[in-house]
Length: 310
Length: 310
Image (tube, rainbow over all chains, first blue to last red):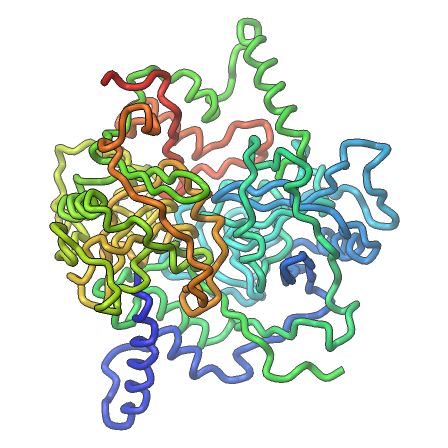
């Protein structure tokens, strides 16, 4: 929306505003940039290397935060698959516009060629939801949801809750990672994974196991050429995008890791961030929405200021 | 989510189901594919060449349906700009992941180099909303909306309505096209255009003029490399993606046009389509959402069976 030169103007405006802060009492609530500028180290959390996956493409690294609190069996299995190098040299075979990117063993249906599994499992029962634990932090959004009784954030992930069925589950927002499956509910398990690259496909919620979220490198997946076959499958083998490797971060030397911090979602600061997105006070906005959808709330990620202690 | 071989299975399953239809009474509501299979010619409408824009890239054609019912001055100006070839050889200068693609005159801020405008206007007052006309067809969605009192479809576009303020306006769903502006509400006009390539940025609704929707060729925009500068601007001129030309379809010979039909949104069939997406009865689904968001309802487009009469 902004003209190219305008970002500089905005930056300048913010700088001027900030340098005048002593003289000019603020009469408006803070913008997201201003909220983040006031964050303390404790508002951020490091990624846990044991629950972080690195997908290495020729173009760079995609960092996935795993969600063992929601899909413990799938997360354990995906880590086991990564550790036995099952994913290495698999390929993105499907990129469906406004929907998903998916990687898989392209020869999975050919017994003679299919990648063998060693100690991991090929399939698992679906982990489509979990019992609602009211003791888990849950930052509920004030504006409701078209699909579910309650939505918000728990442990850094977008979550829906239904007090009636006493369940909670991860929600298919942009960047969420799930385990593809066939028709049977227990036919997934993590051998093929997909990532949401479009408008939140909420009809998939509770139909398939979500197990994590891309926290860095989404653009390496979302900008891939779309497949021209049905469901966005690439029609020619040479169009496939190879995965050089998939590794658990803990298995890399500390200096080979992407040291990232994610904004905590259980803090007053995150509440302020939500409010700064419900009503945008940046100068450009003439109308404030007064509401926000779950999948429109960003969860900021930044480089850690110092690498974690060994 | 499906394994590569699975689409074939689905197609087979549908074929078998259909061939058994005489013996097997249907006990479930139709899927979207089944709804569309029953559509009659009158359920579709051709694009109006006078309100269709072709953006020609090196990789192919992006087809935009303009919305004169919502942004008459902007649509007229965009057509005037196209007709005086203002857009030809302009460039995509910004691709922000999960947000927008934007094209503009990269030299717009340099008076000596900036593209000159002949008879069109450089800026226009914003057309952020319009009076609510209850006589216009409006297919209202049954599940509500996080942002607005009423949402649905009018004239083939996603629309929100507010009976209290007596206004209606186009909504920022995936593929919607708008006129970039600076800080002032009247600083847009159509010289720069953006297209939504991510989760619906509803906070832009009523802040900027939407004037159309991409009905074909989205993947030529959505798969462009993301810009690495602030707000997704390309940092180097050579990264920009040139627009070969932008033309009003009516100005091309009939045999040079993309003859497309769009599903009407004011029919019982479209109501059936919405229902088929609220509750998915394809075999793969074990859980039905029972709801749908505005920006998750597809508006199908197909090649016209025969070119329109000259």
